[in-house]
Image (cartoon, rainbow, N blue to C red):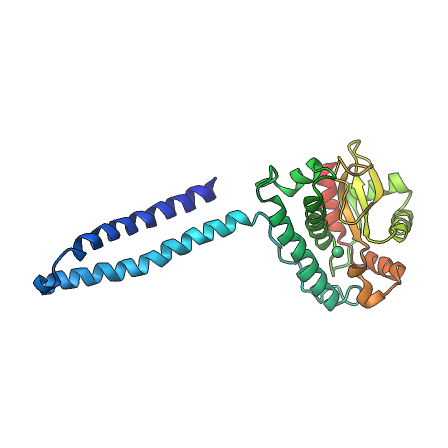
Length: 272
Ligand SMILES: [Fe+2]
């Protein structure tokens, strides 16, 4: 609302200046230049110069509003440099994965929501509402949400689960090691491209699930197990093939070295 008020007021103000200048110009153009004295000439020149300066400003302001209105979603900066996760995830993989794959999902999502009832809604509102008919929003909306979550739950800093998250993991899976084994086995079992998740269900209990392609457990009209993901692992080949080739298990083992458990705990606290 503040955004629209700010840019709306700015737009009206600049346009008002332009209209006044144009009216003055029309008036001045009717003056016979042969009869123009020095004072009138200076006045005319000043108004012409001002109009020349203001018009592009108004045009630029209008263009900016149109651009920002048509880009609902944006690629947020990574919370660390692309080389920060080495040797577990290499710089080139991060650059391509984030800078090309994720960027493309964002671009295509912006295109897909245009002129739909999903335009203007948050991604967390869109994903539970989509059906299998919404293929472009499903693939690109999922791609955007999943990768945004993925970057946030990785960190070059070594962390460990603690507090209520650690208690919930122990209560559900027996121990952290047992949880890692279950999660890793699920990730190895994804056929083709997909994701493995640790989620909080509606009953507030933790569960592990897999989804194909860019689906995720928020897509309540598409997936079997619905929940809020708090940890996710991308097992598309684009996530690991440059460094690990076909050795997905090695990539999964490396993943545990760079999980940002503080972020996972924060996400767990927000839904439990
Ligand atoms: Fe990916």
